[in-house]
Every structure is written in C-alpha cells, then in structure tokens.
Image 1 (spheres, rainbow, N blue to C red):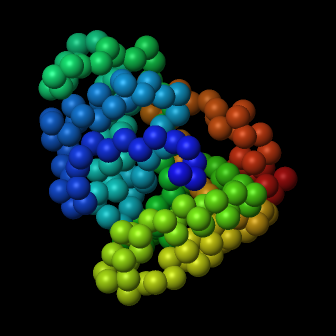
Image 2 (cartoon, rainbow, N blue to C red):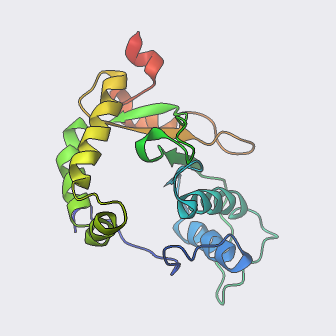
Amino acid sequence: MILGAPYICLGESDLHLFFDNPTRSKAVELIRKVDPIIVMTHSPQDYMLDHQLTADLMWDACFNASVPNYVTNQVNPVKPIRGIPYLFYADALNGTDRFGRRTEVDFYVDVTSTIKVKEEMLARHESQRSWLREQHGVDHYILQMKSWSEAKGSEVGVGYAEAFRQHRGHPFPGDQILGRILGDLCRTKEEAQS
C-alpha cells in the first residue's frame, strides 16, 4: 500500500454507472459514513460518461448527505453529516472536454516533490494499463501522465502540477481551503505570473 488510505468501492462497474436512486443512495451513504472535509472527484466535463456521472453523483451526494429528510435505501442508514464538504473536480484528461475544448481550472497544485509516488501508484493500476493498451493503443501512460503534469506545471512555473476546479455553487463552501493547507504548493495562474 503506497498511500496508507482505505479503498472503498460502491460496487458499480465500468460503463454500468447510472445516476439513479440506488446509486445516489449509496453515494450519499458513503459521504455520510466518511464525513469528509474535502471531496475530490472527476471533472464534470470529461471524455468518458462514467467520469461525468461520477462528478454529478459526488456533487449530489455532498449536498444531500447533510439533508436530514433524505432517507437512503440502505439497510442501516448513517446519520446525516453536519455540513457540506468542500468539493473539487480534477482536470479532465488532456485538459479538454469531450469536444476537445479546453476545460477551466481554478488552481494548480505543485506535485514536483511527489511525482515519483504518483508514478508508482499509476504503475500499479494494471487494469487501466491493459485497457488503455487495447482500447487506445497506448502503452506509455506513465510517460503521458508525467508529460501532462509537466505541461500543467509549466503553466504556473513549477516542474509538475495537477489542476483543479472548485465547486462554489450554493451552498458549498467557497473559500480556498487547499491554499490554506498546502500553502505555496497551491497557486492560481495569476499568482504564478505575479
């Protein structure tokens, strides 16, 4: 185990994901069980519908996990959480939506000091590697990840970066918590250019 973090799966498989009441119920229960301060998920503008649906399910679950009148379909439901967590969307693959248009990002996180860990984690994701080899004809996805992270880093003057967008719609918290936590590792383009 590289990160020492638990793995929790809702049991939904690739290309079988739906935004329906049973899946919504499971997503809300997960947020209630974990009671996170921060949630990071896929981009709502991505090349793959599963990623878009995951983003929508997490947005919905973060909001509904605190609603006392929302009773899930689970056997032993967890109590609602007290507040809505911060929600962040990762940048879409290649920074573009499914039409090839550039997606917006709010800020970047400098991952230069942890790029080797990111590389090691990705190398262990064998099911993704074999699928990309067959579906996309790509077998150098670690090199692509590094290249993409390097390109993102160049946008803000660091070696490697990841880009994110924060969900600031009502009633989600809108202050930049990651900036407070990560300090100089977190920056906007404007900050990098000043």
